[in-house]
Length: 381
Image (cartoon, rainbow, N blue to C red; front, side, top):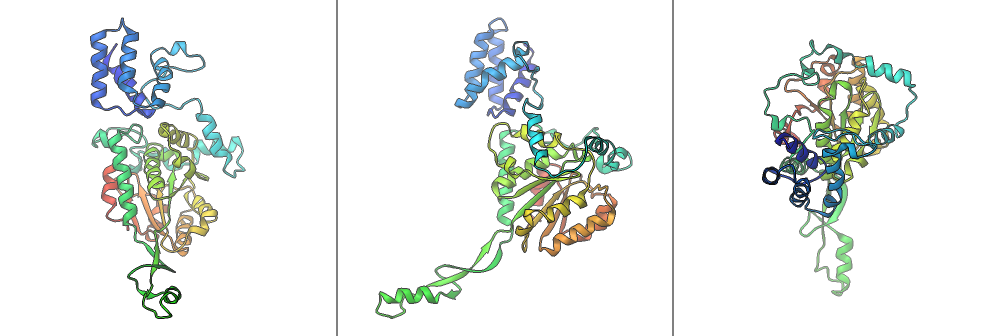
């Protein structure tokens, strides 16, 4: 069997949660060379012993092996390759997401929006910010520029650590409530008097308080329109890390807004399929201003208190009126939110709506790979 096919099979196993590194891949190649293709059962048994480390992986192995090497034996499925592809439940996952969104758009208007609403995506040659969305050569190292389609375990661990460090750097907000602490800043008279009862009324055991602080709430809004199709998967990977480490609420938007926080919190081996389900089920036009207004009037409005963080991951191309985006961002700032914009290119966005609303943002940072997130941690406080 060709070594390239073995590498594709190992990539497929990684996408389904198997922890396989370079050593396991080399061991599987060595087994295939030593036993030969004529002893397929022995090769499959040896591979299974190398790849499966948990009970779930052992049960999942027959389906993945037969689907990849013998797709003709599997009824009702297609041939499985090493590339990330939607699974059988992809349409249902997309349908469930759309069912949660209040929409009055007809199928004809939705198809028209998918074809023509995102005007900047049709003129990528004039907008340098869309070069990656349209494909082409890249000077960035491939290890950090796979658009979130395949991640090594060490990269996922680094992403979780970055999210944890950035969340720890977010400046706590003092509240009006006090909590017991020893020593403290203020005398807790009630607890001091209660302690004095056991001492005959003598206030010998003073109790103290400090002002309670709270970590700011974090909201992440990810653009999944057509112009962001090459970047949405990575942005959702980052959002999932912050949802797990910082309790962030995650929203996706194109012409409408939907919350996917529950989807980000589900822990299984098919995380990439969930991300594909989110990105594949949207696309089309972009109405950033309208979606920000919808976010402002959603149930998240009650949590948009002082010093709340709102992170928007988008290229800035909007089909709404240019002034609408500035007004939406100003409305969020009036609620006390601190706004940070993450754009998927090294250069600053050139969209008209974004340039007019740039003054409303606290920071505008690139987010094209792990290196950008690593550099941004010192500017997020």
